[in-house]
Length: 187
Image (cartoon, rainbow, N blue to C red):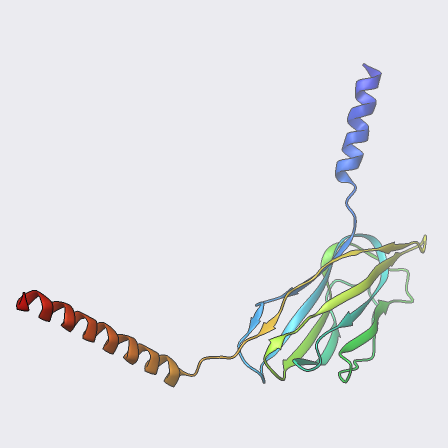
């Protein structure tokens, strides 16, 4: 019986132990036109006693520019966000946040918000790598898997093109219908 209890306890620990991960989220995977701005949330899940975090961010600079980076709500008190936006190469080589206070946070939440502006049509190729966090007071670092988001800037169809397409389709249906009715009455 003690052997079965030991197996049950070992299985419980394995189920409850979840690895931290970074998730990249956007409200919509499709941006409708160049000139539009959109935000991307960087979320960390399953962190324990998180004191600071870092990652590298890259994107297709011919399709979007990063216009702003800001701290998300799920950070310890006194946290500062650092990172240089390099739109010419489409990178924030090191986006990092940390605090000098002993405060930590545990759980899931948005740690940073990036704002982008679409400059052309195409695949944004947003890629986050080298994600990790550090806990306190142990100061252990934990690498995180990253769940990427696919974002595409697609051209918006002007209303005039939609109306033109509708009129052409309606005319084609009318012609085909008229031909069908004329054949019935001729033969």
